[in-house]
Length: 473
Image (cartoon, rainbow, N blue to C red):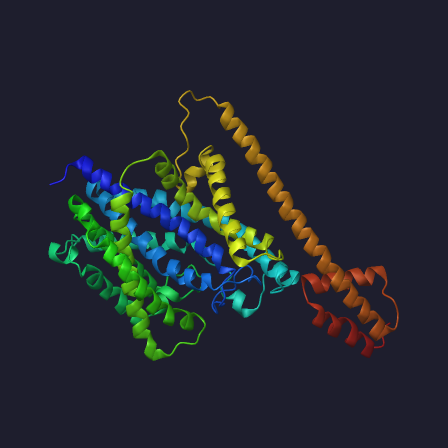
């Protein structure tokens, strides 16, 4: 039997693994704009002209394992909390650390994300300013306009936590040691997920943005959450997960290549129904070879506490919540820059992580706002505002002011540019139908009608074609 101190040291690996996966998620989102193959179900903020086949492989490598690993780790820590502190504290913590940040982020972060996405669609020609003002877009965009976006993980995590409590009442999440520590454990654990993906491939690959949970996805995510709870039952033998870790990582490579052969055809709506079984099996095997392989790897090399790991572990939650619009802004900024896709990706990734950590330090930790997003603020024993905190707040206020002004000026720039286009077209209507130059009042009236309400086609029909028929001048 290992001492409690030895077990605690081994658990540091779970935090290190979580940090790695958070930054992988940021990398995955930073890469989408530069994919060599578009995703039929997603209208990303921009689809850059610079593309690279590297991201064709990087996308599914991250996309398939990131959320399963998150749910696995969450299940492990949730089981620990439930065992040590009881059901009441468990529920209270989920309300404070999961549901509250989800709701606050929906109110604060999602509107910013929507604005940034609209700006990207406008720049890349996927919408007009009128679409933004009316909040009416083409069907591909409209169907995914309102939903939790990247925050869907918190919604499903909250629901999976309640499922855990319900299941816990008649099963204590114990499995035979011979199964959990067998060399074939990835195969055993892969079977439920493969079945779910075979029945409902959309459980992992369906990207409809909606607040209504998809039952198949909830079941799929809960499988990994429950698996983490099962592993917690063997916390005293956590070091044994180092066995076969390199074998699993090696086996994850061919199963990943196997999976990719079916992954992209599915996302581009070009997959045959008879391939769904192969897609589900290869995906589930790849995910579980990766989970047990990386778990053992991090147990082996990242099992000691360090100040940097502690800081990044605290910052990882904030980074997950905040990174989405930041990544999109950098992708928009580089959209028209003539530069290789790999270079743009590295700039977007490093800049986004730097900004997220900066705002974590200055906004989340130095103010009470971070409490609402699940971040514990830095404690000041004396109660006085330190010079460092005051300086950080001044700089943060200046940065936020610049950001708000930049948003305002950017919006005004596109608004004026779009307004001039409408004025030119309507001026053409006056010349075409009335053979004269427009008067100022009429031009302004029809421009605003076209921009904010009717659109150019209806303005031409109602304001000019019909007027000419009636003999108006």
